[in-house]
Image 1 (cartoon, rainbow, N blue to C red):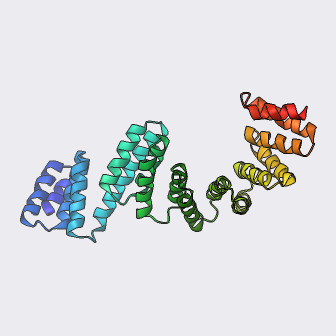
Image 2 (image 1 turned 180 degrees about the horizontal axis):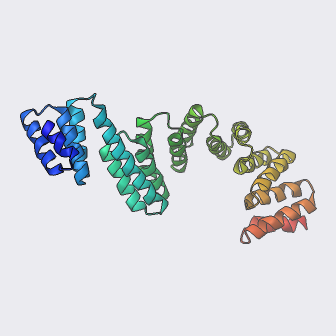
Image 3 (image 1 turned 180 degrees about the vertical axis):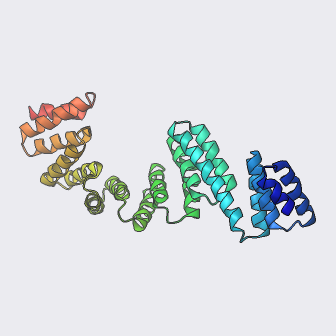
Length: 289
């Protein structure tokens, strides 16, 4: 080992490799030699051989923290490379890097999650859910994983499973307003307006600038026949995000129902300006006039 260490310090990596391999031939259960050989391969740019030897060191000595740290560092570096691919929208490159991360460290939950995100973007619902579940297997407290899984389960036509996943998300992170909002939208689809109201009020209390939450609240109030409350919520939605044509449309509809024609007209004009091909806005504009 001393000869190998000396060669390594002097940058003589080929000599160090020969020395460490010789040690392993004589002492095949010597974890430190396997770890040191992994370091040599890192310097020589052979990532696969490096990882192979780091894993071998851990197999020989499960308490070898240097080998564990080396594996983790390589996985993190590769994961960051995948993130850079993702940011420049090279999804094939990103998927390849995330798969490499998983091969390096099968417990690296973020790589499963990011793979799920890409699969979801590409419409591969089953693969997305599979990867989110793998991420959660390795980190059950990953609230974003539960949220993402819930959204995919909703798309998959399983609202009850989606609600359970979203509830997990807010149990772990009670301030995750997007999960409350997603639950509210599912309850609206299920026509359970009381539960929808409850979670959406929580969402907007947790995050008072959550425009989509106010839009969904407006929808609930309309269904419950509480038009004044609907107008109040939809007004918040349009003030926070003036580009939400659906909020302007529902605001026009609610004001027309109450006979507030001028207010309905103003809202309908906003809706039609934002989305000229949306018939609902034109319908409410005609009613207001």
